[in-house]
Image (cartoon, rainbow, N blue to C red; front, side, top):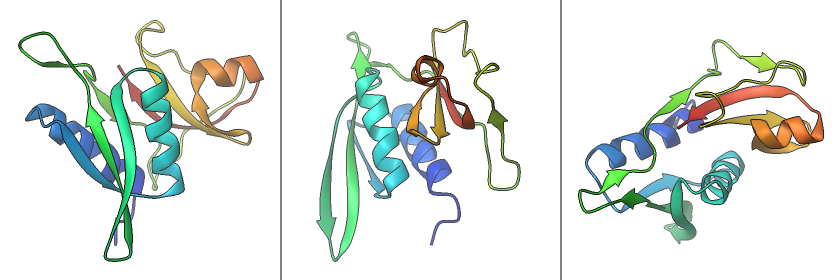
Amino acid sequence: MVTDPISDMLTRIRNANMVKHQIVQVPSTKMSKAIAAILKDEGFIENFEFYTEKSFEYILISLKYKGKLREPVICKLERVSKPGLRVYANSKELPKVLDDLGIAIMSTPKGVMTNFKAKEVGVGGEVLCYIW
């Protein structure tokens, strides 16, 4: 039992990135599915797919690298809002990550989305993580 599945997912991706693994396995939740979809849409990962093993559902995430030296596309993953200290941003004070070179993933009343999409829609919410 994992107390914080978002931190667990980000840590697994971060660790697999450091040792340059091609695929990482993450337990599947609604939130991790939404985060994986955002990472794919924003070009931080190649692809993701679901599979079931012994009645547990997992997400297989294919990590993305660039160049002959296989430099990771994801430079940094940082969890912002934690179970002990939630961080919220309203629609007028959405976070800017590395002068808009990175993204912030947010949980809003309209669903999980990036800070750019939240600005378009005009909603705020919980800031889950920063990625660049």
